[in-house]
Image 1 (tube, rainbow, N blue to C red):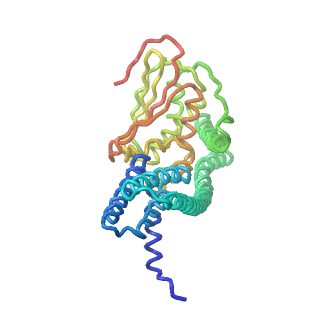
Image 2 (cartoon, rainbow, N blue to C red):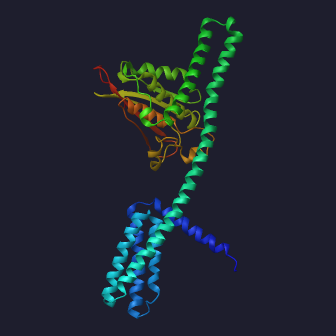
Length: 370
């Protein structure tokens, strides 16, 4: 037996991966590729037919079937290939006239195309299944590592505060004692927030805990978060008017603000400005958390609120995360009847602005933010 040329196998594999990557294109562009490939091949066959040398070259139409199977799933691929074979049949009859071999040739071509599309479709399905299994395994490993990192920081803070209270609590003033207790409680709440995030995310969407809706002052919740979260490495600017009463769950709103501020502190350069701004109109209160970090590219914006989603730039960086924070923010705000979104140009230094809304609960004077 002859030896297999590994270089040729490599070229075939590269071509296969290139064609399969074209599936990411829109339907329009894939159809554009198919029709132009068919047009070029059909033009060649017409030219050879006019010269009387088309014998044997009609089998080149199998390439169109292979291309269709690589660009589309099997049902659209068969439908498209069947349509193109009808076009070929009509052109062939026009040029050469009707004869008894037309129908058997056409049926034979359809059967061969079904075999090709089914075979390639099966191979693509196996390849896609293997890729998904590999991605899930990598995601599981990353998830475990990130959960360990996320839990470690508040756990250390909690244990440290409790150790200090145990060893030196009797010598502390009431103010110092209260400070360390607040630190322990806040760290405990952070642990609960992380665990709740994970539990909410792995459940079905309908099982996410419903908010306990009531009327509260938005500024008090925001200032409480700002008082406890560490923003000492950044320049924090707050524009928070008083007496804006909203409807929602104050604990969940605080969780959203903590997540947004935590992302800012993790992903933007030190000493850069972080702005927290609140304003309202007749129906809604608006909260904006803006940073001066690297920003988010426009085509990546739809991904940031998806479950377990992290941008490729962030996965390659040193900042750990499990990709749940913004997903949970979206679920919580939507459950309270609000809306959350992000605006960014993707230009480094211009940063990102995360917004969310809550329903106004009173008729207090309107305060706009510019």
